[in-house]
Image (cartoon, rainbow, N blue to C red; front, side):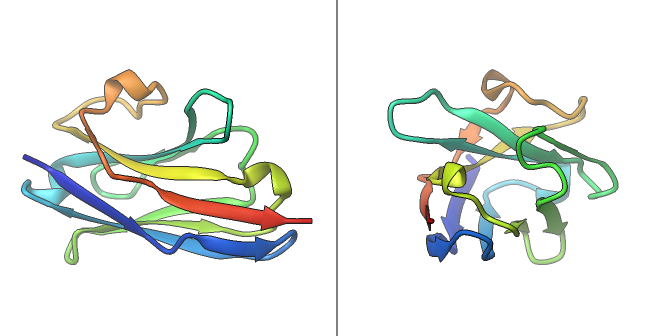
Length: 125
């Protein structure tokens, strides 16, 4: 059973930065495809970005491309989401997700089997 725990959320001003982390346990981390999603109040959960096993490939939603960066440390079992140039529209609960085994980089939430509890990110204007 994969367990995911996010941290690093909080309050930031527009134009500022935050770094989210997600600690994984219960599985060989280097064999997990990892993703980040977010859900704003009254909206559906949406894809933010994803990273391959090795970290060599990433894919981002158009809304965050060029501002957010996903990375992973397979030795420490962590995945990170560096968020720069934050905008009020980035306000949401951010979720870390894991998909075991090989496969393409997935943008659909249904492709991920395990989820963290979420961490709140609030960006003020």
